[in-house]
Amino acid sequence: MSVFGISLIKIYYLIPLIFLTIFNFKKISFKNVKLNKISVLFILLISLLAVFEGYMIFPENPLNKTDTQYHSYKSQAIIEEKSLFYTTSEIPYVNYVKYPSGFHSLVYFISNQVNDIPDAFNFLMYFMLVLIVIGFYLIGESIKPSLGYFTAPFVMAGSVFYGIIYVLYPNYLAYSLFLISVFFIIRYSKSTDTTYLYLFSSILFAMIYTHPFPVLMLILFIFSITLFEMANKNYNLIKNYFIFSIIPAVTSLLLISKKMSKDIVSYSKSSNLLSEPVNIIIHNILAGFGIFYLFMKHPGYTVTLDNGFTFLISLFFTYLFIIGLYGIFKHKMYYLILFPVLLLLILINSEFIHLSIPFFNTMYASNRMMYNIQIIMPIFYGFGVYSIINTLKKRTFKLGFIFLTSFVIFSSAYMNYQIIPDYLKEQYVVSEADLNAFEWVNLNNISNETFLNFGEDAGQFLPIYTSNKPVFYYSKFSSGDFSIGNTTIYELAKFIDRNDPYNYTKVCKMSNISYIYVSGVLGKFCNEFFSDTAYFKILYGEDNVYIVEVI
Image 1 (cartoon, rainbow, N blue to C red):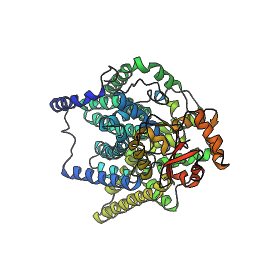
Image 2 (image 1 turned 90 degrees about the vertical axis):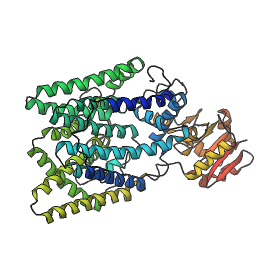
Image 3 (image 1 turned 180 degrees about the vertical axis):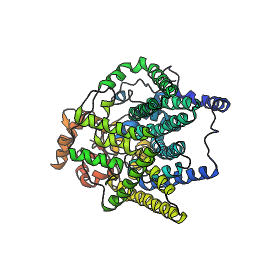
Image 4 (image 1 turned 180 degrees about the horizontal axis):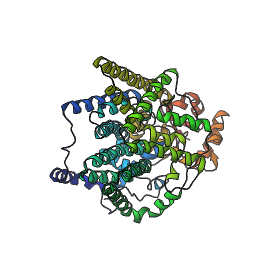
């Protein structure tokens, strides 16, 4: 719709037609997907538990210092112009239009207005968790009957599903679509029913517009299963993999080629190589497989999140991983083993060899690349449990091992609850006090103003809750711009430290700034500075959040 200049508001008129078309499309049939009452109840139970874990970990307001600023601004522009290819040339919005819009189109779809964006983010986080649970269940069932009962619960155990989703919204939506795509491919390989390939093609089409990394993962998976089918001389399957992958990929790119062809070519040639210490790389490789560690280390701030208890949990996961590998090998599903090996080779090339591989060189940092492996580990852990259960003779031993596995999964979920919120508490910047301040701004008809704020704070979300904008925000900092006029944010901070309101307000006036937003984190430290009535007037002050007018 955006490509052809059709206002997105008209999607609401098309929804009934879309559903009627799907309902009457007789070719689509799920008769081979055996979702009996027990299966449905099981999926509902695991989904509810996964969502509850997320509810305990995620804050009420999802807006944080980093990527949510980027995604909320892009969503704002889409909502206001009702097009994914919005035309505003205002900075920073113009810099975001080229980013894939799959996630943001869903934000538009479920948001009535701009200030609904944070609620849409929250809803989609839980939606993605449920979709990931369903994906792992379906993949398990497509590999072996009843295997889905063992793969899906490991979503609750994985730190990867809770510790980074708050930043990588589009990436995780594409991850969930990747899992569904893998299910369709495996199901087709066993049934040769091309219905699954048509469904796969539609998902791939959507993935390309959502995030490139899971698409690259899918390419490697298709390559893995293609080699497997070549060894078995199933050339017709290989032909269909190629056809049903190439057609949606080429079509999706051609559709946006007029608007983004140069950007696509430029992206394919780009490289995001980082120089990391070898010990960090090794740690993240091990953590990706759940060996000794459960949590990744960021190359920039190497905080250690694992502890003695997570080490014990990782030993159990390592055992399951080894047994799972053996079971997969024994059942001759070699493509499932080759796939993570290829992902690991991409990391090794990126970190050490540096061969130029179009698109794949955009994958960066060992932690980010190992998320791609960590995200598929429930398949191996689940297969490990499945293999052990089928090896045990006595019912008592089987029930005992199921109980032990359940205990470890819930223990890992509890460690997620213990570790992740504490690690992320400083990342989330919008509090109830900030929401009250934004409401006060709206009630007092302050609009179309630029507020001086203090960096990656609540003030960067003024455009989402009010009709104003901040001086500083995450993507401005990430581009290396820390200034207002000829003055940096560090120099402004020094004016406060030296109690120099004259030069502080001079900078404000030279930049035509009449208002300052002081978030709660800083308000308790600098309220005395803004109390100087010769230079400032505090218009609002509650819970250390201040709206200050420059006199």
